[in-house]
Image 1 (tube, rainbow, N blue to C red):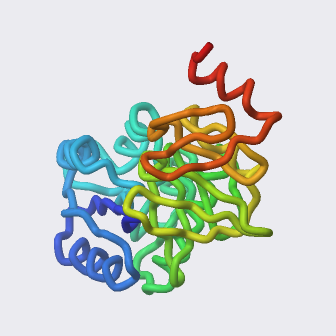
Image 2 (cartoon, rainbow, N blue to C red):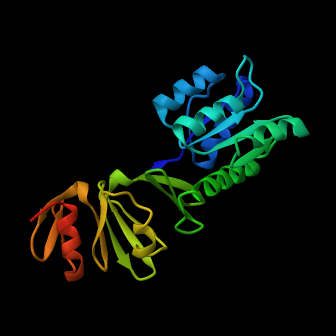
Image 3 (tube, rainbow, N blue to C red):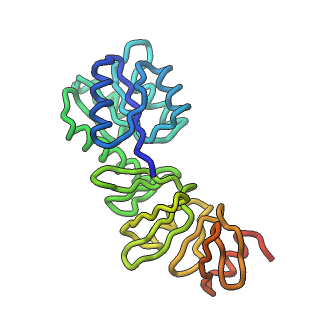
Length: 240
């Protein structure tokens, strides 16, 4: 698991530093802030943030709205607009790129937290939520942990196991996570690396090391194959 990475784009460095401090206190990972369009795109390409907080009014020719348009076109992750102006013109300009959330200065830490939550939830609706506490955005699962989201990349998951109304997610690090959902719900939202092999198990085929008539091995851990799933497994991994 890792913290949600947030990029702040704000040309007033005192404000940017205060926002970053607040984000760290809330349990997020605040990247080095950017002050203009060029720096913002460089940070996005290098650091791959999960969400950005964009001041609409930046010094220079390009604004936070231009950054938002570039994010929509090329990077596809959520962002929050930040501004000291709530006038009709500013709001209408912001609406053109359909921000998942909007934050007006001055704001409190609680308002900052709420805006991040709203932005993640609104953006995740395009892909489909598991439930209100767990979101999937791109190739990562965002799990509510102690009040804030932690990110689990799909590539870090070995397999998922049904546990009544929960599922256990077993990670490469040998950590286990408990999420309130079902295998039926989550399989639709995972990528093509994942396959159902049993009514109680979904595996990540990237870590499939052996297959027999009755079981598979994910790294060194043996997991049973359900009879009705075997044909699909064979097709998916191109075995005869």
